[in-house]
Length: 454
Image (cartoon, rainbow, N blue to C red; front, top):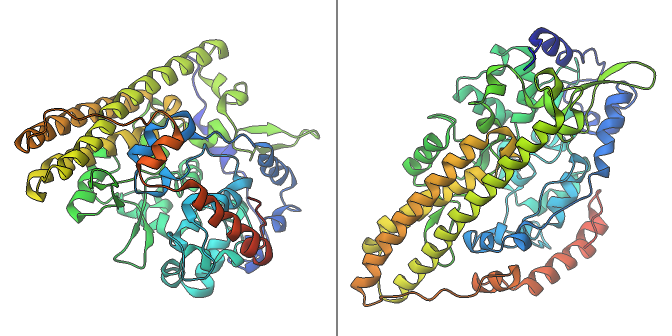
């Protein structure tokens, strides 16, 4: 292993500075405003439009449809694309519905929270609480920019600075005040303002909130949610009070060797490179770290081939553990559904449903984190093993309940395809598609600045 030059990394990350733009001015939200001052950074950011691959996670693994039964992620769940697609992909997603009026739709305006620099402009314009109180579709006509410059940089100085007040509150609650951090960690916090676990706080205008008051590990966050008696949704089949983990990259990165060495997301995904004219700049296309091996990984890793093999092995191991946990938890959902049908009472079911909730939380925490096989495979395997174990405990508890009500065996339906699984959780895919198509053609295409096709 080669020794990392931490000082060089910190200096490189802190290099962007000196903009004459007015802080929080409406034009700052427009990414094109920054192009003249930072042409290389802008061009590399714009290249994320080339990241067009979008895999269908539900098609690949239909068990996930069952796990999210009753929640938006059972409707569609695709692999993430580049920042240039942030607004379009959210607008096109079946999860946001087809709201034809400002008062319709399943999601709050807080869903825009990590998709656009227009968020800060809207907070300034009408207030964070007022914005968050609105429905998602009520504000689409104001959203004209994808994740970009003002999301991560102070408009006056150009320095890396998270733009979201809810992120700053979250960092402070976790004892990580932004102003107290070293420059390289401050830069990484611009990523962490979005690549974290969060929820919409129904007690405070549905503002975005990070559940970090008790810690930034999965056990602490689960305890936080349990203490609040918070749930994201009630499961369609089991009736369990469920939690949906988001994408906790910041949390899963922290207990790693990379974090100990001050190697952050910026180092791996946004390395310093030279332009055609020989000018050094930070590459803003947020790509695969392996593609930047010479600029990043080679500081510590001697062989690209060995690293690629290691990552492939980790990915395979995590996927195997994921499928094993899913198989157990999916069956627990169906067994709970059969227990209800057999006449089980709420008091009889309470313990088993809590176990289902906990098992799926640990599963989701592992698989919802983008690239966890690279960031922290050991944690992923640990949480997935925990998910499987608790899922088995849930099934054992349900076996007792089922036996009490005369059920000795549960027959599981066919959920081998996305289409079959969606029917089982009560989704009418054709109807959802028709609603989305109408919304895109009659509202988005006519009224919203970023046009999206069905």
